[in-house]
Image (cartoon, rainbow, N blue to C red; front, side, top):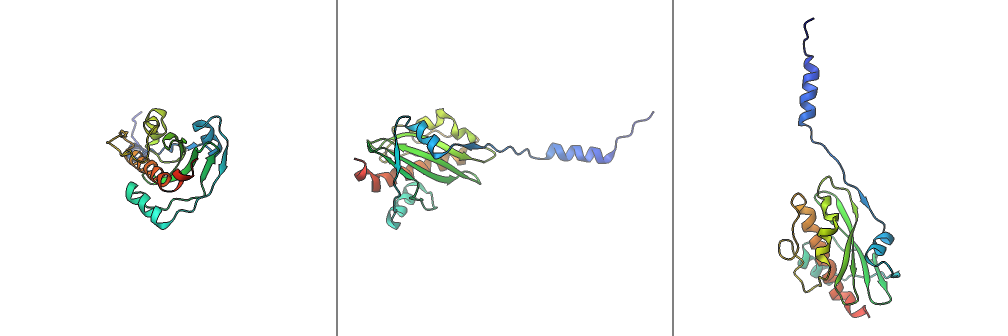
Length: 180
C-alpha cells in the first residue's frame, strides 16, 4: 500500500501550528473579599466621594491615567482606614483593583479584583503587590523607580502602578483631612 498525504490535512496542521494560543487569565475577587484580604478585622462603610475636575486633573498629571475616577467606590473604617476600588487598562482590557490605605495614609495592601487579559496576570502575585505596602503620596510610586517591572507584564505593571499613584494622590488631596 502506498500512503499519500492529504494536502488539506497538511495545510490544516500548518495553520494550527502558526495560530496563536489564547488563554485568558480570570481573577475575580469581590469588594467584600478584597476588604477582608487587606483589612481582615475591620468593618467599612461605603462613603461616596465627589471628585472635582481640579482633583481629577491633578490625579491624571501625577499618574497618566486618563479616564475619570469613580468616587462611588470608596469605603471608610472608623479608625480612618480607607478601601478604594479603581480600574485601569491592562493591555486591552480593564483591570479592577483595590487599594487599602491605613489611618497614617500609607498603602496597607492592594488586591487585583478582576483581570481578564491573556497575558500579564503576574501582577496578581503577592510578591509584586507587596512592593506598594507602606507607600504614600509622597513616594514616587513609579515603575523602574521604586516599583519593579514584571517581564511579560510591562503594560499591566505600569498601568497598575500609575493607578495606585493616582489613588494615593486622590487620598492626599481629598481624604487625608477626613481620615480621623
